[in-house]
Image (tube, rainbow, N blue to C red; front, side, top):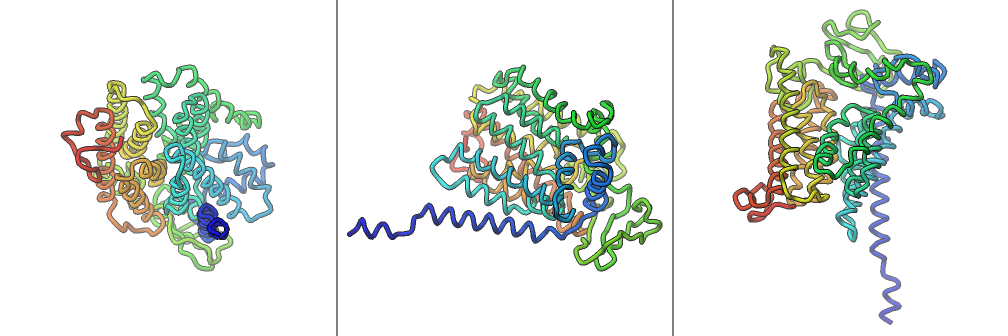
Length: 455
């Protein structure tokens, strides 16, 4: 009788998987709900790239230098032009698709630690509902999920001790966005520790060049292709920006662009040039040149928020120098340590670089902490006592989005930068204590028990 009754009890696994599927569906609905939002980045840049590809023969358009993005993203954008759906939906669906790829690698990485629990599924759900993740793709229409997904793929294969695939995935990440370099020091550390054979690193330039090959075949010059990232660095960011003014959409039926100051959108004429179309889906917001306290940061919560707007140009090189010194410091500490580079240690190294490098470098956008946003979530699952790192990181990134989306600072960005500095120091200290266990007896981090730190 007991056995017969047990057959009618609901299966726990079925309930869990059903709930998981339902929540994933809700995450998709949330993104679709944000699809009508149109930002200035979409209207002034991505939308026009889409139109150029569509009106210049698809693949044939790649002979021209019509975008400051590297070609791989534009290849995928070209594929969306063949879809029988509106342009806005096609562009955002591409980014949302890679939200899914990103979530897949989050699942695989957490699964390495928790093989007999639902923790990996929990990580997927946290990423799916993390505000900066769904805002970035579904509201902003940005492609940060693409390069970050490949960076996570590289990390996953490093954790699986498959260095060749790790280098291939990093090369793919670098092919999509220059910000993938925030992950490059992880490979450098492994090279120094002789965990990454030098010959595998040669796969990076090979794959990178192969990703440029279709545009070269279409007729674009090699010089133009190989200097795209140089141009991005010289222009202050990969996504482009308005020369000045606020770049503000005011919504309503006319879709009016009110560019303030001298930073008018080309062809707008004075301050009231109009975009065609309009409608209720217009977005009130845009990039504000005055949102950050310094011209050396574009709303990023970096240490440049504490630098005066009139600071001399050499401050740019100070940040670059500090970032280089920090990479050298961490690399030296790892090499000198006798600690085995376990999955835990590699994850800690990855997060430290993902937070500290964009914090120190000049000309960072608010979106450039995207890798840190995602990796901090994985970090919270690996080291539950330090869960607050992910919460603070997510809040800091979300607050740095506010000047773009709301044309105001909910919390002054210099204060947000202080919070980023705090978690950078905590994660760095956690890494040092892991590399040098004898120091644990002297130091206790917030969220740890007694004198121990999760290793």
